[in-house]
Image (cartoon, rainbow, N blue to C red; front, side):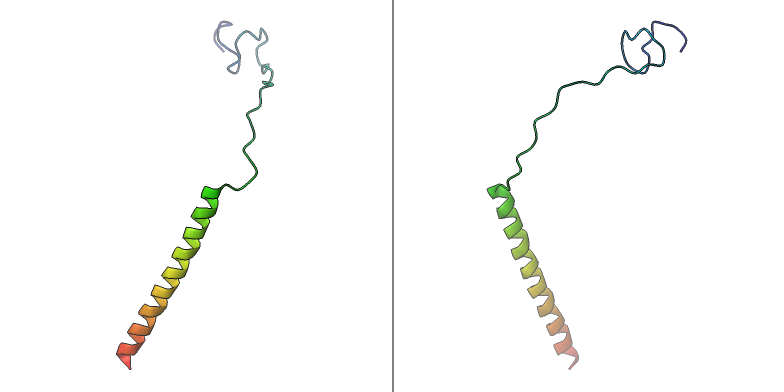
Length: 69
């Protein structure tokens, strides 16, 4: 570092060059562990969409195979 007025590793006022400042004691709140109703609705919609896509794909395969016979 060029001058003592600069922060050492981003910590203001440590006084000792090369020392890290202390960690904060604040903790963010933990998210809820339960699955919400919106999550269940999205999961159900994705499962139904997957089943519809598989049905459509099966129908297309049968259609293309029917053309060649």
